[in-house]
Image 1 (cartoon, chains in turn red, brown):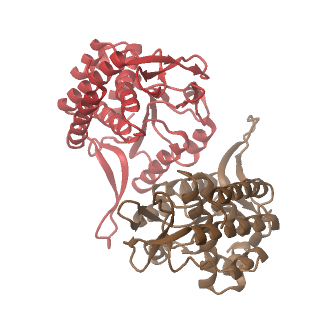
Image 2 (cartoon, rainbow over the protein chains, first blue to last red):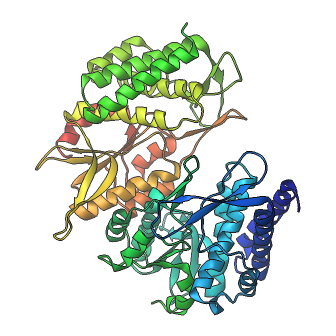
Amino acid sequence: MPSALKTLARLSRDYIALKKLASSDAGCDGVAQLIKRITETSQDFLQSSCTQVPLISKVPGKRYFSFSTRRGKQKLSRAVNENLYLPESSYVEHFAAGTVKDLSELNRSRLLYTLAMSYCCASDLLRSQDQKSPATFFECLNGHLVAQMLGMNPSRQVEVLRLENDEEASTLPTDFIFDLGRGRPKFHVPIKISTRERVIQVFAHQRVLDGVHGFGTFKGILICLTETKLDHTRREVVEICLPKQWNLYQRFIAPMHRFYYYDLPEKYAALSFGDPPMNVIPLSKFFDEVSELRAGR
Amino acid sequence: MPSALKTLARLSRDYIALKKLASSDAGCDGVAQLIKRITETSQDFLQSSCTQVPLISKVPGKRYFSFSTRRGKQKLSRAVNENLYLPESSYVEHFAAGTVKDLSELNRSRLLYTLAMSYCCASDLLRSQDQKSPATFFECLNGHLVAQMLGMNPSRQVEVLRLENDEEASTLPTDFIFDLGRGRPKFHVPIKISTRERVIQVFAHQRVLDGVHGFGTFKGILICLTETKLDHTRREVVEICLPKQWNLYQRFIAPMHRFYYYDLPEKYAALSFGDPPMNVIPLSKFFDEVSELRAGR
């Protein structure tokens, strides 16, 4: 059993390498290998040095637990969905081999969720108050998945306008832009661990793209992990959802093409049957509809 | 000289009273009295128990210092603009009497800035990691100023839409809405200590209001304290400004009617001469143009 310090050192080294490689070649095999290794190191730590602490779930139909270190003061990781977390080594092989699509939808969801959560939970317990590295890891993971499925690497910002007298063009910093080229769709892909009240940024960026480039030029695809919030003292998990706000933003700021969730909240799933319907679905479905997306539908 | 603990207890008591009273009657005299007392308590503490530590200003033409307690480990308050901070008791009387307008523009700016900063700095030194109470205090201060000048109290959210089959109307939570009534202007007034990258929310809210109620129905007025950021280790002050982003948001999300600053950054002031021009001006000017604003110009 490696010590927590050794685990942290190994994770930090691989994380730095991942960040660097993903920024230059998000879709490459090396990125998949680094994500795989970080996930395995994290899972070893969670399995050998941690216990699972049950939580009080206020989310109908979902059960959650936290990881907690066996020694020292009882720190809790973020809340983990019991039904979706399954550290199965064969899953990770599918990810590394780029064959996620071959799994059933439930197993895909489990693979994806477990990939996203392993490092996040290990980081919660090994570092103090680090929100940044889980968010960056999650971006690298999704950048890789989308790059692989679309067969191209993203850019990190979009040049929105070049006026005649303007020497520099204005750029809009975004999470990811995938531009399949002339006559093909372009995708604006924000990535968030959770959205809460910050979701309005996503719609507002989409609005700028629609305004500058015309409606439908950039299709907006939000990828989000979860909307859970853990009260560490009470050990209660809630989901923070604002479906009425989402409906307003979709209608009055800018329409988003897809919303993919790793751990989809029921209240957002219901927006698929709302007025207007919004495509809020599990990320596992992305692998089935990617060819439609590429074709601009 | 009262102890830090006694000062904190007094500030906390008055702060709680302020929050409560301001939420029911933002413009009333009691709110002014509480803000005055909180400011005086804060200034007593800053004067008797603290020193002024010079900072390295990276902001051209502006000098900044921090307050620091004389005893204990050297904690720094947020950065204070040397030219604008002037704890002059006669100023506070103008505020309490509602006669801010009678002061010269520079003295108005000093009064307003000193009112906003005194409690914030005291709170920085007396509490640990409290961002919330300075933000709330700042909201109460501005809610009061605007309510007094417009002669009416604000509401905290706007009912944006009531569809025929919808039992509940959707509401948009905003900082302040001032509705002068039928045929008169309505104002959407977000209040921020600083905006950074979060400014996009302001434009996005404005967009929803424009979309639901039609252009020009709600005039957007942002009130902001400063855009400084202090590096506590290096003791350096910078201003974080994104004027190109602001220009994009103004053009492609929604136009804001006014941007008022207590400590106006040069780069944002320059947007007044941009394309399109944006009204980014010192808050002191609000007192001169309030009758124009009330008339819908």
